[in-house]
Length: 369
Image 1 (cartoon, rainbow, N blue to C red):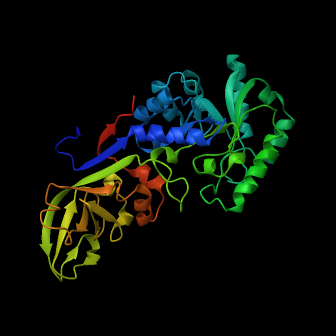
Image 2 (cartoon, rainbow, N blue to C red):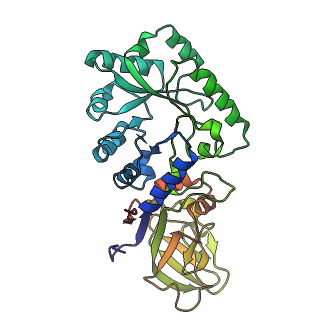
Image 3 (cartoon, rainbow, N blue to C red):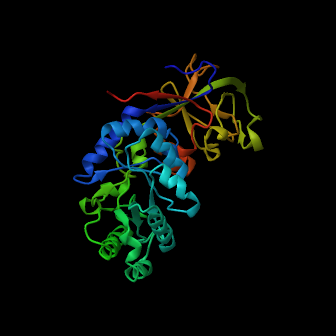
């Protein structure tokens, strides 16, 4: 490892695992194109490092949320397709043109504005249309398509490269909303010009069945090792490992309390280790008095509240010589996958992943040549 010796938090990111996860998802996608969602700086893991690896694997389309994210991806993937999920705002016109970004159009007003840009520049601009099939967030609904039917000129000067929607309950395969949205997507997309590729499935949707795949899938969190099929074995390779240094170990006894609020009363003679990681590093405060860390091969409980820079764990049960000051504890790793930690924190892998590493020293394990 090439970590700095003075680091207290280390985040290891396995680029080879990300590449392998994309290959697995591409295989699951059948004949559909397998894109990659790299919004939020590749879910916090660094788009500048992740995108080139996936581009080398053959990924051609990288979805982002914002214009600034799109510009960052364009800098490392000059020949890729870069759609912006948040859509088009007039004040972003020049950035869209300069960085060759594709807006995911979510309203008729956005479409009018983008069509005006196409007319003004005399360019046939690439465009993606999003349909609202039941998420009730972004996207065109049936009434919007009625309006479009009366104004065919809004699409005439644009190159619509994809029709997409987003599933609300794909991580719950038995949920009736999945079939409802599939039916709505088929019905709504048939009201648009024929022959345009379609996309409905993101990470979990890829595992719902062939009828959800269409011409493109858009995996995101699964690329980064989070389980796309909760309740079943994770088919993805783990991508991240998080370690924190033990700063101090002290002996305590009954009558003492650990951490802010005195929420953990010591029941008897114990050893408490203080780790150099806290919520300022993205280690969630909700893990206090309920999470665990791993020292060597031993799982030990977090006791007391998580503070801004520190976490305390009860290491009483560790064998002699293990868990000393300066040693490392693993917070996410083989014995404690990211989904297990998210469950301890009362959240989901998405949130935990995107919160990590604000101060961590990163180590990228290279992808295989």
